[in-house]
Figure 1 (cartoon, helix red, strand yellow):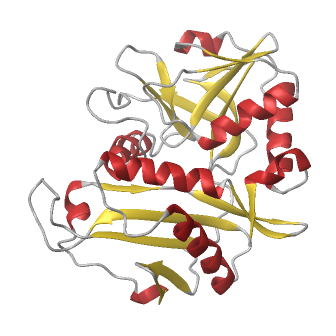
Figure 2 (figure 1 turned 90 degrees about the vertical axis):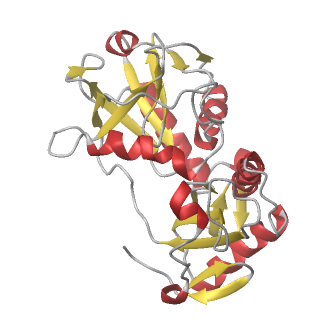
Length: 300
């Protein structure tokens, strides 16, 4: 992967290759870390981080699930993120803040382990670099909501996503789609899911999915475009009868979907009108071309 010069670690700017942890770091063994994925975009007015404050707020919400006593405030994390970008010179790419239980305690109860915080950033282009993607219903179920706090962004949750992605290796599919414990559509391994039917957008309700920040942005964009969005329980058959479908996520941005389980969505096999409008409008927002969303951008 491409690297940058520094990583912020517990309040200090460390050279990328020197930002190391002990092999007995608690979260490495038990998955008890929380993180965010954030993007920085090169706009006409310079580099800007998209919805930095909202990502940091969710990061701290996730940390509270583990009763982590984070040694920094949300504002300190926001300031450190912007300063890291200034020092590295990164104008477009990905930002990864992570809070984890460090070295000094083993056993399932992390009480007594230090809480460490790091922020890294690096150049990163399109996560799913295709005009449209073909997806497959995964054999793996989205984590049951009563087995965890499913709207927290917990590192251990992503074992579920790793397995779903690995299932596709050697196939022609670009991404997976996970169902919940009732066989309803939940989300992709790292994306929220939408369909368009008869000019109306539908998306699975909160409860078994991550409350995506890009998801929230797209709902607001659709409202501005005069397109109604409804949270609704969806089944695979609803996708096959839909006109369009797309993923949303910080990494995936807005990714249009061509087929599910080899069944084409819509009639043309080409980008749908509403999905393309949403995608174009989203890019206008993150690149600072839509002044209505200027408050979503934290200028570097």
